[in-house]
Image (cartoon, rainbow, N blue to C red; front, side, top):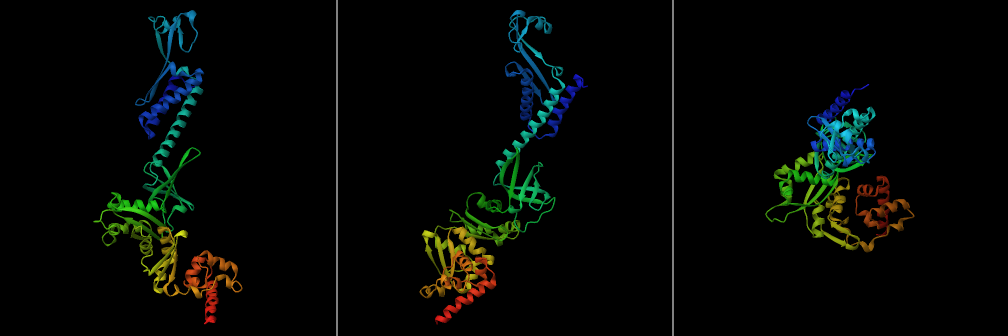
Length: 423
């Protein structure tokens, strides 16, 4: 059975351990300890003890003092034993006490039972854990959108678990990783804090390397003019690991925003490209002129003209035959990102086909030769006439309509035959 000195020693050891091992500031430890003691005393006395019991916690020494404050009354006038003490009992503590004096009696550890002490220690550990979780939550809530550098701790199929310099765990899901990312335990990992959520009272910190914000923060880190606000990033679109487009502008005519972002011989942008696993980055000058903006967004292709349908946010772009593949880009990423950057649905046409619409044929006219599901796929990619389809290469149609190349080649054969028959 524990003696009173053993009980005191165990509590002091508990406090000292918390002080030395937990990364918690002094005021927080005092507040937590006082709350735990207060809860124990309220339960023991079945009352709110705030009025008549003082708790003094000495964090530096790792000990505590508890004082029960009562007013001295005549023995026959005792009405509230929690707040009053008989004169006969008071003089046993100090012979000079008189009626109406205030007595502060120190409560020793022997005033509490073994269960009280065990409950106090358990509650203290629980409160410390809750405080640390809340602290982590608030700390990273303020870091959402910021780049942090962590160390890879575990690599799983669906996610990577990283830790920061305080040992806090952070999660990088597979969906937030660049396809070419490859990490092993101990590697350094840079990402932005995407979100902070609470799951069963524990903070869940999610990182991202695919977010447009990650690319923006990298530019802010590499390009002083962006960080200082001399260059403004207006829009960013990405296909992580493949290609990205970023529209920039500067209100200072002396600054070339594109040149500043790229750097001398690409010195500034090369570091960003390496971090993003060789993701191609197109930096273009932002403009409110939609024709010029689309023209820049489709670079390196050179366009001849653009016909807008503002109601449907559609842009029909005409160019020479040898520029079509450049406008579409590998995997269709160039035209797809240009559309997202400018806010228009962009369709590309060869110049020679721009004035032949009067001889065109609606795709539905071929329903007896081409399956309806194939026609629907062509409609979904924005083609509703034969010449719309023929303005692309079979490979582009197969990619954008998600059709087998052999199916597309058969469609091309049927459509071309129609015009040959007319001739």
